Structure formats: structure tokens, C-alpha cells
Image (tube, rainbow, N blue to C red; front, side):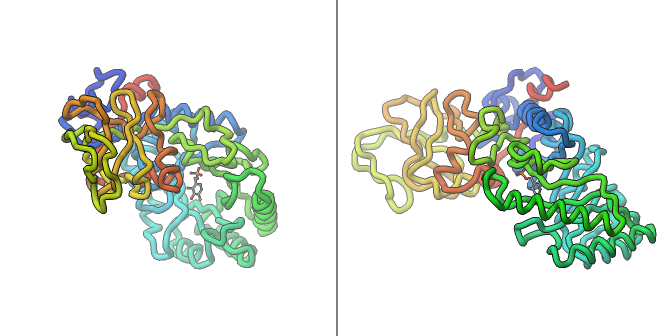
Length: 399
Ligand SMILES: *Cc1c(COP(=O)(O)O)cnc(C)c1O
């Protein structure tokens, strides 16, 4: 996704809507307006649910919202550190001038750890091999040992944990690195009653005991992500790593924060053409939908290459002229057709594909439901053709 330079958006456009932004920047296609004030407010809400510090997780380009913008807004909202998966994701945050603690937790053993440490990026260590690769370089890395607390995914297996802690202590005494944290991650935190949560907490507590017994003194101890930050205080320790919640996604089944967290993106698209069709007119690939009566069809210039899940075909809706309009026929790669009924829509009028829901527009959660997936996948799936603009109004109200 290409971010429009913020300087291209005039400060005077307050409150800024995607429509005004498009008029002033010369952008005419699908637009993604990101609301930093929502990110800051969400961060404040999450920080208020815990006594622990908040790490803003801005991986996957800030869940599709723009990593730098989300990071800045989250720090204004009370986050005190940043987290990403790869070193490649970490470096641009430094280049943008963000100088808070920054952790990268998912790197192959041959990654450029020297560059990371030079940029003061802290590194998670999931294996003895990673530890050796980092220690060998003798670059004084600040590391977080990562214990698998129940996903059998990233993090060291429990059987290797004691050895990892001992080896880390040896490297620490040799002055080659410092263990500043221990981390885990919960598999089922979006289901607060799930027994795996207690099991994960117990395994993490055990991992901390083993680390201390090895002589380590990890100041940062972190297990919870958004769902557990909202629902499971026992998992908070000294730090919670929140990503989804920053951008307004509540992953918990009971919606512990859903009425309060605010979606931070609005996706819009202009009507390219309108046409009147007769009853019986089939629409789109495979003719999966046929107009039951004479109607007006509007064409929007975005499709599954831009992140609209094709699986939402036949279910999805957009908002246009204050009303929900069904997307009809298959969602194509580049375009979708919307049934406008008797509405006389002008070319260039803007439809809202999803947003916070304030005006009755669908939300990313609706699109996720229509395509049987998660909001996370919808917001991170937007394609390179969608231009992202920052709502300056939000930034000003934060200043
Ligand atoms: C993505 C991720 C997070 C953030 O999770 P959310 O549920 O989005 O808050 C935290 N920790 C790890 C290891 C992650 O991969």
C-alpha cells in the first residue's frame, strides 16, 4: 500500500473525510483513511485496563494502517514501546525517528542482527541457535528469551528452555548480550474461559522460575496480547503487547472491549459508471446473480486484489447515499458491482466499503463475517493500489 505523503494533505481539511482528501490530493481511486485519534484513544483504553506497560505491536504495516502512523498515535496514547515481527519491519520505525524501545521477535537465524543491534532493536530469542548467532557477534544485544507457552509455533519448546536460559546466562556473563525480557504468547486468549489460558499462564510462570534459577533477571515479562489485555489480568505481568486493539479490533468472543474500541480505518471508492439494466440481466463472472427486476447498477473500482475478500460475494454490502447497497455478482479482481435500485447516483459519488460504522456503513467485522474470516485478515489484506491517507484532524486533536 502506498502512503500519501502527509504533506500532500492540507491541514485546513478539518474534519477530513476521504472525499475531501481525494479532491485535494488528486487521488481518484479507492482510498483508505486512517484515523490516528482512534488509535490513540484505543491505546488509552487498553492502557487503562492494565497496570502493565503497553507495547504497541505495529507489525504487518500497523495491521495495514501504516506502521509509523499507528506507532506515533499509540505512543501518544500511552504505549511506551513498539513491537514488530522482523528486523526489516523494525528499521523503518527508527528511520522515522521513533526512538522508544523496539522489539523484533521473528527472524531467521541468519538475519542481520548486527544492523538490528546498531539500530537498538531488541531481539527475541526462540532457540539455542539464535542465541549462538547473536552471542557470536558480541554486539551487546538486548534480548528477550521467547518460551512457547502453548502454540507449538514460535518460541522455545519447554524441553529446551532450561538449556536456553543457562546458555543465555553464560553469554550474558561474557558480556556478549543482555537478557532484558522473557516472553510467551497465548493460543486461546480470544476465548477467556478456555483452559489453555490457565495452562499458558502456568507454563510462563514456570519459565520465569527457570530463568531466574539460571541467574537471569528479565525486567520485561510479557505474555498477553490484546485479548488477554482486555480479559485476563493474571497474564499481564510487566508488559502487554497489543496490536489488534490499537486499530479497533476486539478479538474476544465476549466483546469485552468491542463497544469501546474504535475502528481506525475507513475504505471508500468512487462510482466509476452507472447503468440501467432490465429484469433478467446476469451480472459478473459466472452469472451468479441475475437482476430480478429492472434496476440501476453502480461499478466500484476495487476487488479482491485490493483486499475485498472474494468469499464475501453474494453477501457483502457498501454504504452509498446513506443506505446499504448489496454487492451483486462475484467480486472480481479489480471491480465490484453494486445494486442501486431506483437511486439516481452521479458518477464519482463515493461509497463507503467499510468504516467505524458511525453512518451505518459496514465495518471490517461485517466483511470478515461475510467472508468467514477475521477482521485482522480484512484490514491487513488491503492491496498496493489502495492509497492510504492520514486524517490530519485526528493528529491535530492529539497535539
Ligand atoms: C501479533 C502479535 C501480538 C499482538 O497480538 P494482538 O492480538 O493483535 O494484540 C503480540 N504478540 C505476538 C507474538 C504477536 O505475534
